[in-house]
Image 1 (cartoon, rainbow, N blue to C red):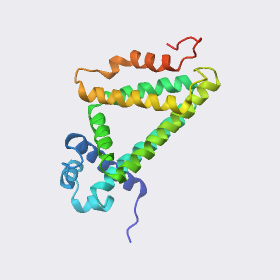
Image 2 (image 1 turned 30 degrees about the vertical axis):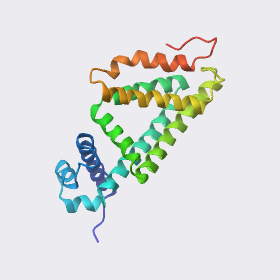
Image 3 (image 1 turned 90 degrees about the horizontal axis):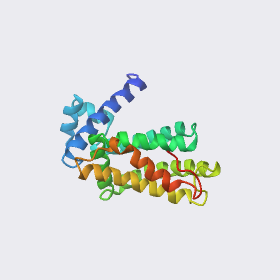
Length: 203
């Protein structure tokens, strides 16, 4: 039996997922065929099915990888001061919102979660990881007095999620909207929302 090189296997899976993500972003899940993915990845259908049994399995892997990346991101942000970590998170969100392909894929996943229960479960899991990490970051900030201690961290995290979701929708609706030109605005919006009533607003 041929021995599988784990690193090579993971790299090939990643390349297939990246090619599929480009296809999904350009054509949507349902208009993308496995043949499209094979062409984009430069592989045969037999090779594709060696790594993923179906198109749905690729979609699931993309969503799960995003959740893993979010968890890894916040593991790093927890090493920073809470408000610095939150500021860094907002900067990363702005960078992602400036990537049209990423935005289209994110909205495609969101739409698919309303149609496919299996996708919905995975999206909910990923959102739970993000919300939990934001909640913990805000709880730490409240304990240090950096933000309003009367705010419920879970509710505040949910509203920051609303801002992020709204940003992605605005980008999709308004081609003239440039997320990275709105950095000061989104930072002001979030930091003023979190600021202690009698405290100084973070810059």
